[in-house]
Amino acid sequence: MLCEKTGINNNLLKDKVKKILKMVYDVYDRQKCYNLIVLHGLNSKSLTSIAECLDELSDFINNFGIDYSSEKEMRLAAKMADNNSASIRENALKLLGEVYKHIDDNIWSVVGQVTPKVQGLLEGRFKKLKGVPVTAAPTASTLQPSNSQA
Image 1 (cartoon, rainbow, N blue to C red):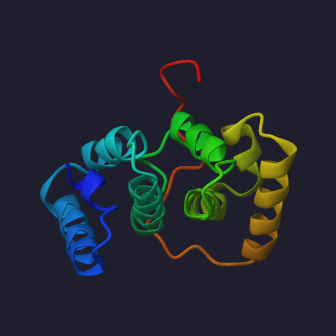
Image 2: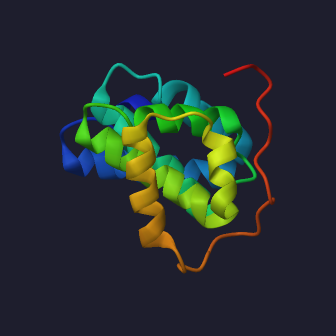
């Protein structure tokens, strides 16, 4: 899967894989693409791949809105914001920041219970984003409820 290849060390190949991944959105159903990135990218064994997939998901939300997202993925991203890896933590915060731009303070009901450390990181990120206009596609006012208990 392309998600696993986003974590390779060769920057030239990594950039080409990310470009191919972005082109896939025009060919295939965006919902399926999003779900595959979440399924295969965020469950990868490679920390670099996880970080790159979180970055790709934040770009996806920035370009296409939050209509494809569910609460389950946002709770997973909130858990990843507590990761020891700085790149995973930063990209998880970036993803949640993109969601915050769309749903504002409703983000707290979406991410659920978080540790005080993550809450402080998120509040700091959200303060930076206050007043930043949304430049993405039209979005729903709330995320899709997850089908399973998270």
